[in-house]
Length: 222
Image 1 (cartoon, rainbow, N blue to C red):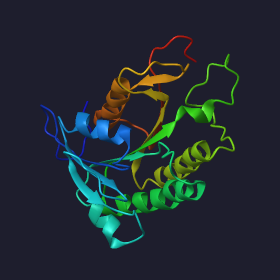
Image 2 (image 1 turned 135 degrees about the vertical axis):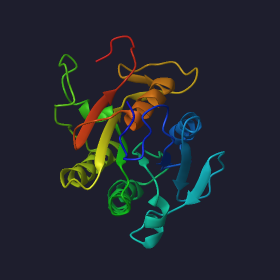
Image 3 (image 1 turned 90 degrees about the vertical axis):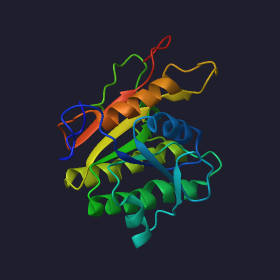
């Protein structure tokens, strides 16, 4: 089912305006390509990015520029996947300050849904024999990339709890691109990741906050 945005047609696919952050990342580029088949996709990043989708450079600051970026956007896909070249300080700034600014602007401009791409690494501290579900609390390790995803989720929860914006958190497994071999018990093939994001955009959900663990069918999967 499609999201009921008030103007959705009763039949057929609804074309949405979707903003994807971290536009220079491999994941965001693939999502841009797959989602642009059915939707109008805009990407953003802190520096110039070459893309077939419309691009706007943004620092995601607490300024009117961020409001202009999200104006008339229906869904935001905010990538929490770590940039391995970033310093811990840069990671913290992106996941906390920038995520907060983006959510604040989105709530002010009436964005209908915010999708945060987190990580299943948050659940690694549990015993491998446990059947860990979305109801289990994440355990942040003293690893900047994992800790930052945890902090990003906290900010998303607070905005959703105040009913400022409908929020979906997708905890993604270890993404496997193209013909790369899968060596993880929580491997996630990029095709499955794209499908999961598409469903998070199009599916009608009832909660103020929905969390999903996303991984592919792989050997010894947790």
